[in-house]
Image (cartoon, rainbow, N blue to C red; front, side, top):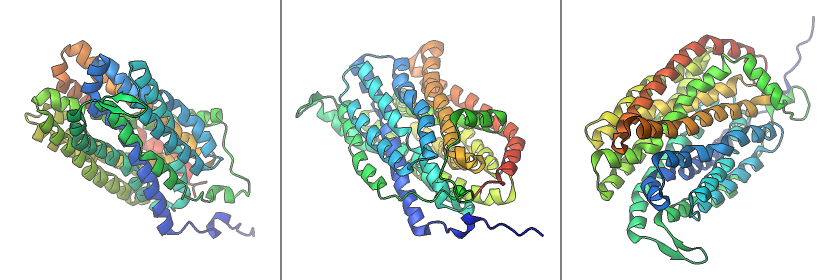
Length: 452
């Protein structure tokens, strides 16, 4: 009889729960900051357009395309280092870079300069998700990983919501005060001041990241080898050999990114153009949008993370089932909010939209982490976010702007552009998730051989 070989990883305990949850909170703060710095530009659209004399379509490139240039492509390279190197240092460097570049957005006085600064913000933020999710995999056992990732991904809705609340509260006062002469930099427009103020806290968050300890990479305990990373081309070969699992899932969940960046970036302008609001009224509704984003986004990710932990015990495709359930709420909310007769009704319809788009951020990330081999986990996470952000940033804001500029040919018809894009994208994403179910089940079974 052959003696059973002990699993070395089983003898090494996971980090203390209290400290592990502390790590989640630090990463959550970094993610919140990332979304504030990423999305505050949505509140500055009319002032930037007026100052730089640009169209909706040009503005959409600042909202999405410029940010995505390096965010999407650097993420894969950074993930390769995350699969073999120190993940904490990668996150520290990323937070520092994107915070500095956000402040440089405030010093930009021309369209090309602002475009390049937004490119830098994206380059820095590319260093967050792949190493952060890889860290969480080593900090939590499988039965608690969904909740941990759920809390971390609460940074999406919390950061987005805080950007609206901060902007709706502070920016009207900055606007009223007008351009200011600052030491060294000279005259600074209100929209430029806003970029500088939201970029400054990043330095403190970067220092906080340095309190995180690099955990043991549990899967490598079995082999006794040092952490290693599969070459990028081998990772791509693995993904495309299982394209019905990975590529279809990635594209389906890109619906979330289109909603966040294609629809979300235009919400302040939708309110301003559709309901003829005064600056004070607009600020009030923008703040309420922020409250909805934080409260129901947090409920969504916590619910999604909890459902992930429940469903994955019962179904091999439990993560995808959570996404499908959430997509029903997202489809109803995002397809109808822009057609509401009053701004209050529009904000209320953003409740199911926000809940429905928040839950899959936890479920989607957990799904990818669960079926990715350890030597390529961060890389596959990077390709996941590469797809989400390539589609979300390039297709999202620009698709809405193109429909407005070239189909309706009227800025005041923005509401119909939003409803059209949201309906098409949500239904397409739902259909792809249904197709993905049996293929994900097969990959989940395969993953059990090496999952820690």
